Every structure is written in structure tokens, then in C-alpha cells.
Amino acid sequence: MKQIIDVIAKLFSVKRKRVSTSDPTFILEKLYSSIDGFYISKAERERLKINDTSFIYGEISSESFTEALAIAQPQAGNIIYDLGSGTGKAVIYAALIYDWKKCVGIEFLPGLCQVSQALLNNFLCMKEIHQHFSHKHFPIKFIQGDFLNVDFSDADIIYLNATTLNPVLWDKLTKKLNELKQGARVILSTKKLEESYFEKIHQALYPMSWGDCTVFIYQKK
Image 1: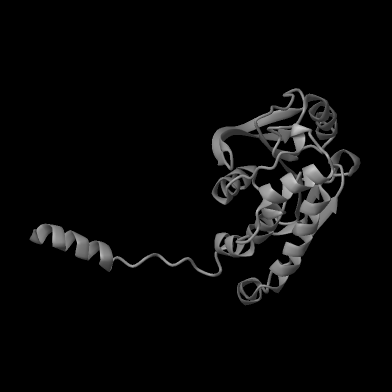
Image 2: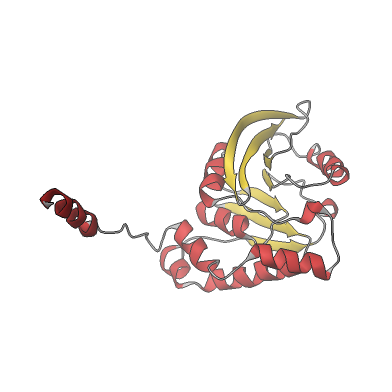
């Protein structure tokens, strides 16, 4: 009995690890605590009568995104685009952990893009940002529109959740990706790029909001 009591006492005596308010994950969770991107996306698709699976909402975990970005090796002054940026979570998180010349999210659904912009405004006003990141520049921009009609040829890094993209859209998009500048990296879920244009530098399973998913990282030849 004494051994059981001692074990219980030790369990209750362990202090819970506090997450620093300067931790990007803490900031992201606080900023998005009341945001349900899945609901907003569903409501927008119903409002606009969009049945195309390409617009189904999904997210990568911040831990997985951190690892994938590190493998892509961003350099100070690089440019990143998130194609289908949803509520802007990946864009804002990327801006927190690296120094970019431009950090751009492109989102087709107006409601999601509006939420992204509102969250960006809130983000820039957060006390944690003023306290811990006053030295940083956040060149974040959200564009509402079709990424096929947006020029992202200056990208050093592209992030794209391509799992649900329909074949026609994917074919058109790959033609644009094939025109990226030499050395550009593409972080891509599920689908593969033509290795006549790209070199695959990484492949692994990463947790997504819908389950584990294969993520590929390519570099433009």
C-alpha cells in the first residue's frame, strides 16, 4: 500500500511543463483557438455550391510542417507561397520561424481568405508578438483567387496540400510548377511531380488532419 501511495504522490508532485509565450506553437494555438477552418470551408462551399473535391479542407500539424520546412532549407530573404492557404495557419507559422522576403497565401474561397486576413491583423497586435518578436518583419500577404491565375514564379518554396486536387486542376498546376526557377523547392502531399523537371529530395509519412499522408519534397532542376 505504501508503494502505491508513494507512486501517486510522485505523479501529483510532477509539475506540468509550461510552454513559453515566445514559442511559435503557443502563439499559433492561441491565435487559432476559436477558429474552425473545416466548418468555414464547408459553409463557403455550400454557399457557393461547390462540389469539387479539390476544395476539401485539410491541415498539416505544426510539428510536421516545421520538419518539412527544415528539410527544404529556407534561406533568409526567400519567398514562400502556400497554394490553397485555408485560414492562413501555415503562412503565419512559417513567418514566425523563418525570415522571408515574402510569405504569401493564395486561397480561392472568399470566406477562408477573409478569416486569414482578420487573423493576420490579430496576430500583428498580439502582445506576445510585440514582446518577443518586435525585431522581426512579417511580410505576410493573403490573396483571394485561383492560384492558376496568380504569378508565383518568384517562389523559392511552394507548399501545397494536393491530396484532393482533381486530375484536370492538377495537370494545369503541374505545368505552372514546371516553370519554377531552378533550385525552387516544392513541399507536396500525396501527389508526385515529374522527375524530368524536379529532383525528389525527401519522402515520408506525416500526420495530417485526416490521418497520415505521404509528403514529398522536390527541388527544381
